[in-house]
Image 1 (tube, one colour):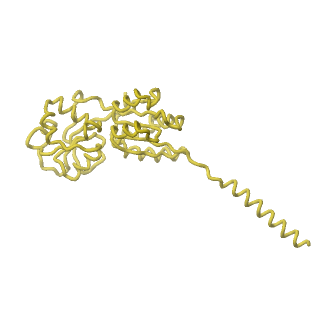
Image 2 (cartoon, one colour; image 1 turned 90 degrees about the horizontal axis):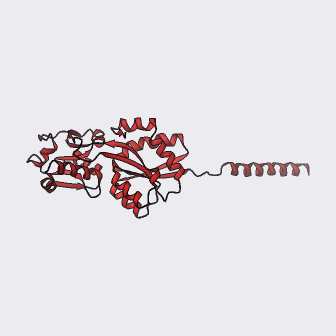
Image 3 (cartoon, helix red, strand yellow; image 1 turned 90 degrees about the vertical axis):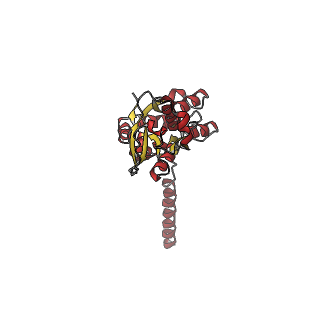
Length: 259
């Protein structure tokens, strides 16, 4: 009988510890924030994602594309929390449709558009004006209707009064990284991209930077979607993007802080 009582006691203790263990190992779901961001932000945001997740119990899910395409996704009900655009146009349109919380929008960064050629190119292309000469047979640029970098490129050529002829030799990309890839591969003679895109590639060279006034100021705003279920966490993320730590990283990738 004594032996039976000992065995029963051991079994009871084992069951108790098992139950306690189950409770302590209960899975806690990590909060997830989804950010729709311009393609030109992909490299810098990859680094910032790592930094943020190390310091917060939050997972950041980035989805990149042209700002115009991302705008369409939001208009069609995309399940996301933040929109990080490469242009004020898309952000303003979404705000006017009450799809973005207007009070949450922050103008964060600035950029420049540049003309690039393959690094080993033998062509004598040194300016945006050269695109309208026999030196260039094919130009790569974003689609002005949906890609902000393409819109800015069009404005530059319109300011130079050569757009009518330049557009005949333009090949339109779906986003700015698409254009960068064409130039890297030598599939076009030159391309118009953001300065930040050109700086991350060792396969292209910048031959000209668009002078101020040739196109709109290139401003990157970020804002919270009205449909977000994580508004507080999303605003905290905007605060992080605006922090000294994050701004330094943005600058390392060639962006300028909006003043």
